[in-house]
Length: 159
Image (cartoon, rainbow, N blue to C red; front, side, top):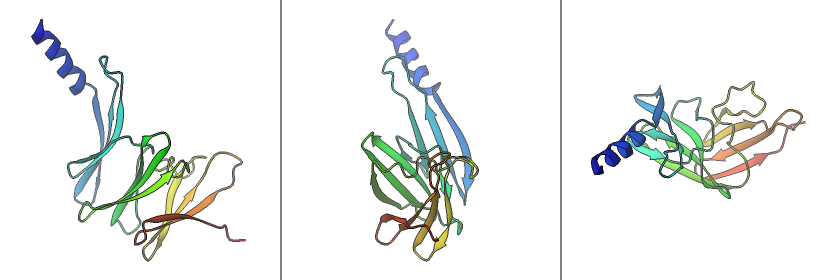
């Protein structure tokens, strides 16, 4: 009986992992979904890059910078705390920017024509420029991620 329980537990872990591989640079970036198991009832979505896993993926995926030097995504360890991650492809260094409950980044990885897409518009030196849509009829917002200062600010729309 003990072996049956151990085998079922192992199968529930191994059988519940699925990954969508995508290669960015020389190393694959994986978006992994771990379905809830029957013992704990908790599932997880995560990004894996160079063996490091970033749990609690809040964005549908990730976005690669136009210079192909890094990629960005959002995790949410709990409902009141989101973190924007910028990972350098060359070193795997992770620059984290706390977002709180802003809602920014929840559309990273969606197609740009989606009404809730958040995507990289371009680069300006050490700044990654984003466009964020928050639904049909809502104003489009623009953001700038300063990699040096590790800060994200909303940029007023040009008139």
